[in-house]
Image 1: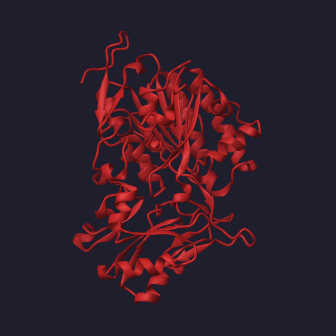
Image 2: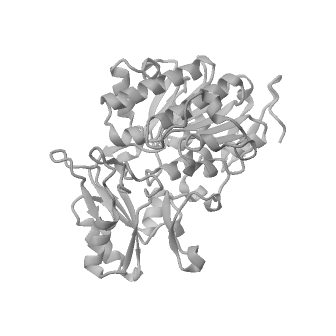
Image 3: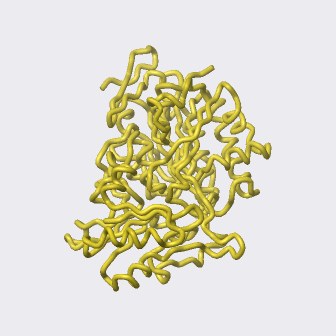
Length: 431
């Protein structure tokens, strides 16, 4: 493919995973997609009402901007959704079905629970890599390093994490001084500063002209701790508002979405977590070693959620028991949905070999664990807030440009968070 000609308007379109993206406009109007981790729509509305986020208020209410609601992919976790966004497709296409899964090929064919952060698990290419190949100046800044290799797979451009900003190299990350870029200190991984570093880096890359297509992905540390409208949440969105306004002032088209929402998973009276420890339940029913509960929320950063989310998969030693176990799990108080592998893959667009025999989704206010003894909840400094279920599937899809008839763009189907690049590049229009 030829390079984008910034002196002319020669059409430049790339095809990725069955979708076409028009890069021609990047020559005069660069595009940034911002994935705000854990962002329920209520966070934006509350910050706007409080008067602390005037730019976000404009996005929600100005006729020259567009604000809609969309569905994230299931499970509503970080890795599958970030990859869906940059691939423009569901997990059935790109293969990343959670943060963590049971890989039967690992451990010399004996199987093991592993992190799904290795690009070897990717089954599809990303728009970011294709756009860079076509000549776009692409930059990716993500909060945690767990996503960096996946988001940057095949990418010729800038790609680094705020977490490891002190360890970047030109060869590995396309930049040799990420700390100098922002002037901010290296942030703690469990802090709002991690997300601020992402946004600050994005703005500086835009100001320097280092990129004309960016993907910025934050962390949900604040959302796990703070409900919409709380002082902590409003302070976070006020901070974000300033950086988004600066990008807008630079002439960038901005698409804002989220990888998932967030809900309280605790007893409102006592503050104690509402948890179904499913492995303990199954061990009681079937005996030890007869089943394996895998929690796809698991990642290296479990302090703020204790590896407790609202989505689990179950592998059974005797698959012939699947039907009867589904019936029994469905009767547990706090369970919203139980499906076998085939039905779950059809409904949630997942890869059959990367989930268990059974998929379990808990109710809005309930989380699913494995064994009680397997979860360290000592790091929960506030009552449990988490995600993973259907109740965290609705996310913002917001643009600083007018998008005509956004609700009917895809033949009336529900908008998805992974439509964000398509809309930003192909449909967003400056008033």
